[in-house]
Image (cartoon, rainbow, N blue to C red; front, side, top):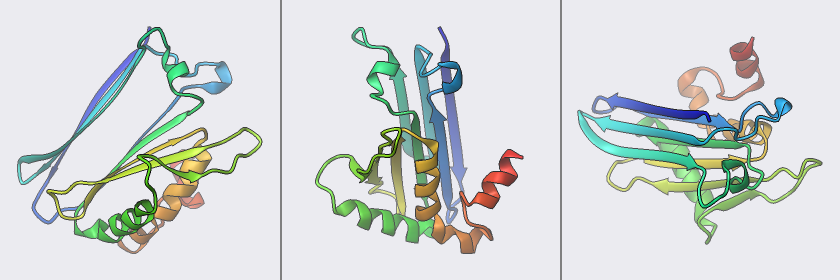
Length: 176
């Protein structure tokens, strides 16, 4: 009966920028440990000059007789990306434009299926009371689709960071 709880707090000075990628997967699929827990909760708090400007909770729990596995409908990856500040303005603007073209709460980014029946969804929200701030949520059946998507949407950060986030070189360096 595994339970997981985390809280992340980011304290930003005036003029600071933030890119937070909180990524969690269904577990060790090769061992059939897929969403094999009873509770997952995560809370991210962003403060700007000491004032709380964003609280983002994620809560997964067995409910109404359905396990988390059943409730996830084949999704194996959940990601929350929080963007804040002038240095992420280009990323926020591009995501906003991309998501304006949908009329549903979740934008189905990739309706194609591969041999595993992979699917990928995003949801995007502007944080109205903070300039250049947004929350991007991603659900996918594979980590590869998420890597590819983040590689594309975070590309404008390459100039700032000196490398492209989620590029093959970075992934190999971090896992090796």
